[in-house]
Each structure stands twice: as structure tokens, then as C-alpha cells.
Length: 255
Image 1: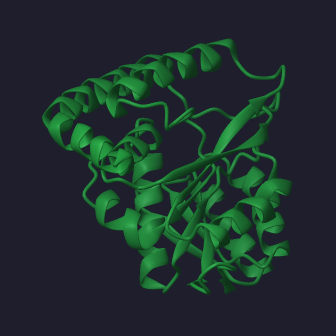
Image 2 (image 1 turned 45 degrees about the vertical axis):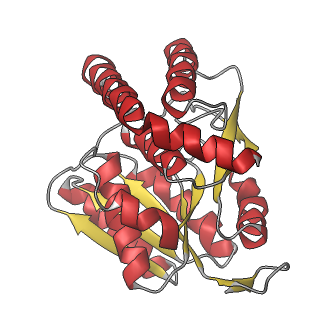
């Protein structure tokens, strides 16, 4: 447990790692988290029996690692929600969401934890710094999503909503996330928009992202692009409903 240098607010950070078809890669992710003394909540999101056994062995090998198992795949959003609920029930105040495939620079973990200690009431989010391994479709999709995020929040507060490396202040974020029904790829996008609507301050910091050549992708080109498009449509109309509230908050903050 660490304390905020400004107001001595104690924070208790764990890591949430959703795992689906990345059980082998998740071992190095867990190893790095444990090396930083961060408790880990692994979410087995409906992996095959052999994948489940790998995760069981990881839990046995490393201390302070808990495993929660979904009998069937619920999607990334469903896995993160389960992880957040588990974290709240275990008494953690903050949850670091980390992808299991190891694409994020794990050396950045201490910096993000310190940022959460300094700003315990805010969302601490990663802004991806891609290398040449980034898929072209991913980069184009990110630009399109960034445009719609700006429209849906009426701001440029969120420069990236697709990077799955972020620290949630659970007291403020869990009451909103627990009501979600979006369990698939649109989750990472929707959660930031809805937390923005709720007035949560977000702070973005760069992180290096690498896509391994032999990496396993869970992204379904047609289905997930359709799902993300539907998410943006829903959020756009949600913004219209909340327009007076959003504009009123902006005017109030300027005074």
C-alpha cells in the first residue's frame, strides 16, 4: 500500500489481467507485475482446458496471484468487469488493467503506479507509442475512434481510448462500470467516454507498444468493427441526451 504525497490518501493497487488465448504470454506479464510487488487478479475468460491449466500453474508459481475463471468466454469487457468486482471485494482502491499478450512496455508500470499515487482520484491512462510492428488497420481504426471520442465527449480530453493499459480509481469508476452491458472490444472505448461524462479527470502518459510477429490476436475484423461502430452510435446519442449536462459542467468549470 502506498500513500499520496499530497494528501496522504492511502491507495492499494492490484493488477487485472484478462486472459483469452494468451495464457502462455501471460506468464511473463505476471512475473513482471509480481517483481514490482503488485498483486495480480488473472481472469481466465473461458480458455480451453489446457490453457486453464497453464494459468493454474502460474498461480501456484507466483505469490499474490489470484485466478477467477469464466466457464465461457465473456469478452474483454466482461473479464475486466469481473476483475474490478474482485478487486473491490478484496479491498483494493485502484486497479491497473494490463493486456495479457505482453504488447505493452512493462517497465512503465512503476511510473503509472506513482502517477496514481499522486492523483488518486483520477484515471491514469496510457497513450500508445507504436513502433513499425503496428498493423495498418489498427492505426487507421485508432484515428477514426479518436475522432468519434472527441465528438462524444465534446472535448479532446481523451487522445486515445483503445489502449488497454490504465489505472482505475475503483471508488469512482466501479459504480459506473458495474452497470455496463458492453463486454466486447468496445468496452475500452465506452468506459472512458462514460467516465468522462461522469466528470472523472483523465491523465494520459506515453507507453511503448509492440506487436509480436507470432502474437495471437482476438480481434475479429468484421464482427468487432461492427460492434465498435454500434458502440460509437450508442455513445453519440448518449452525448446528445447529456448535452445540457456536459455544457453546463464546462461553463461551471470555467468560472
